[in-house]
Image (tube, rainbow, N blue to C red):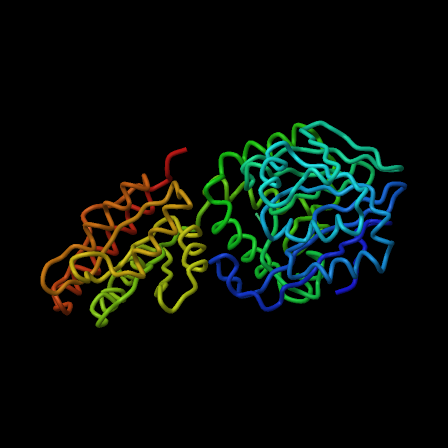
Length: 404
Ligand code: FEO
């Protein structure tokens, strides 16, 4: 796509990655984009670069507006590979440019490139850079979502460039929230935000709350939030800040996510009566079969619901591999304020349900005990037990509010 103006003389010059479905192990059914931005002022300034494979596209976009050799400043808000692996290409075209970066960003970037050949300036929160008619203000945002991360704010245009924060993995002809909502829906956009948050930012909820509070204290007027992935927020940028606060505050639906896998359908046969028990208490239910669902969707659905029941057959006395894989992903995301339980079937000797509870404890999740195990196929009595298991869990969910 060609450059798109955010405001006068400020352009998106990034690239769309329509085809990516696996983003470092995170499924991206909507594709993604690598957003970077060009400010045409007395000092031409580039905010971020793109993934290496797309360097031709951003260079073409920049070149359609200005000779890249005239770039004076390159701001590097985040050093993950998808944002800096075309930095060398840009710097080859603009060798006299100065790179503005956080202290931890510089330390990390040193592992990518020989920095001695480039002019570098380390910046911290509160530092400013006047580029002509505009002033850029830097705001460090460590662990949102890497140690090096920072935001850049353009005071005169009231644009906040936020690297990964407030992004979504979307490749779309629409560049802005209002366009995307018109083409698809606000529900679709909200879902993409929750997906991104759950899979990338879940561990950093406390830091996100603190950083948003800090931004509010700064009283920055914000017309546009421009992240490095997906849609740019211009219709109502406050809305995405509020969504992030809800997510960081562990806000959830009054529902249970049943996340399971099955070997010979015995564990699967437990699900309908469990779901009916949950429903009988007026609590919503979602069912996610792991090998039929992208892992990122399972993680998102886990985070959206107040509680989760994890179902697994026992295989060789331990948890079924796809369920263990889900739990490993989940542990890395350090979830909090969710009530969990486990159920499953076994043939010779149990093992999976016990192991899943041990994993819950390792994660520090609140768990509802005991779990439920059945031998081989559910009998009539087992079906009744499943219904009661679901019903009891739903009762607990209605009373559960997490630890805040
Ligand atoms: Fe889009 Fe943390 O990289």
